[in-house]
Image 1 (cartoon, rainbow, N blue to C red):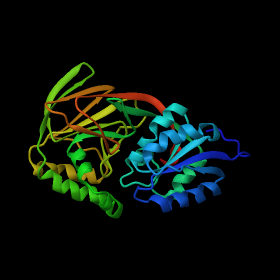
Image 2: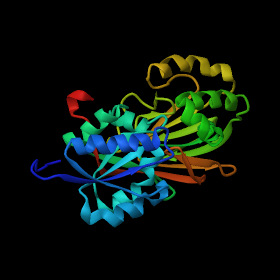
Image 3: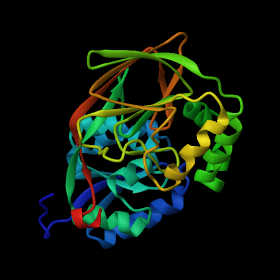
Image 4: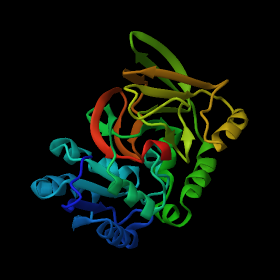
Length: 300
């Protein structure tokens, strides 16, 4: 981002008050950003659903949007960002923060603010499913059930551990289901516990969808978890803990720009951690849709 150092950049700060680090982190972010030379307008929305309207309201008074929260909070702002074509800076204040991880943005609030001040912008892709945009991940099956069951109280207190504890409970009762997958003039029917469609690289508690996945590769990566017994998951744990992609028996990976899923009954689909739609579903990649502040290349 070409910046005139003699002029203060005007940023609209939108913080999800219900995010794990919430209100206090928002106040700290204002101080940090002001020290770095920004003029900050603090959005007054109490609900992330208000973010698009706030962005549109301030579009002529600001140079950038700064969103504090988890993946769902950044997703909540997407319509306003697309309508205004304003660049966005991300402050990872949520639980897993997989979008920030994909982009190489550190969890440290001062460091995340410094990345915005450094001003390096990258055009990134968006995922799209049934009219809903997603930055990072859309999923159905096991992970959607975990997201449905995990309590906000547990997330705020225990962070990623809340998801892991809930997943352990869910996996005992999870049942495989049939899915017809169509992509790039190919099709297959599979019996799966979970389908994950990724625009970014990381999901869950920092698992990698594919080692070469990036958020600007103009493709979607679909992972299907096709196991019948819980103990078949054991060999998948070591690479997952190392932040590597999970491959091998019971794990199918499909790459495509346009993917359709058909199930025998509707299954809920989460986009960036929030339930938004259901099968049948069509997924597309929207290339280079938005500009995001990211670290300098040597720091990523």
